View (cartoon, rainbow, N blue to C red):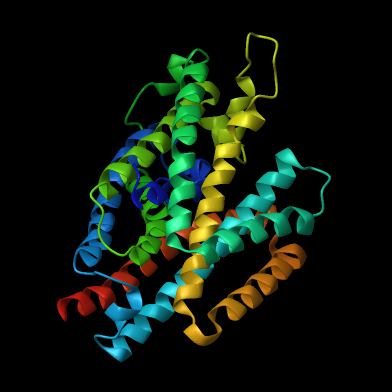
Length: 337
């Protein structure tokens, strides 16, 4: 997996932390994993268009945007906005999760600043270094996901899965569209890859399967009613795990992989934001935007339950709209190649 494709694994998973799985259950209950499977197929279609653009692209996005300056400028602005939205989501999710469960007495800024500094350093070093870090972390993420699934499987209550196909067609469709949007939208950042890589689809599917496995674990242990009311159900379910029946609190170790998802996504967002800003001042402007965003999160947005809920309900809509809006101009540009 020594390619840029390893980044896709983290991008695909990142936006589900928090209300993502809860939102799927609110639409289709115990059938959420079935709707997620259909959503994975829809997400593959969206990913196909990203790959199609990459297959005609050999070099930086700016070179592609030069094919038509007006269309290229529009595409760059849209991608910059999408990068900022994803960055904002990543920071709010990270802050809320960390303060809620890991560093409960730490002020928000103290939680944000080290995370942002590391992400900025990695993003400014470039795509090659980001890829190396992602390549190192992917095996650990996959291993912890498999161990968590196996460990939780002994707690499954089989009646939680039955009967199947009890949701409405509308609910099932909402689940599929939501899963496709949340999982595929962050992969818009892969347009910065220099070229198409062979493993893009495979890694997207692998990451999607890991999310579906998490959905099955949550449903198998908690059932649909409890899952609908939990924040971060993927973390709460890990509390069932023990090592040798006496070592507890292992959920904090397993849940760190969700933080890694957000870290790689945040790093790619910062890298994308830097690449879409005017080249002469891109680093300074990126740092300024990050500082302003950290202040906004600390004073206005962070740790707000109602706001988090509203954000998640609009995330699938934003995801699909921006995916289409960005794909269209870049598709036009590759036709000019």
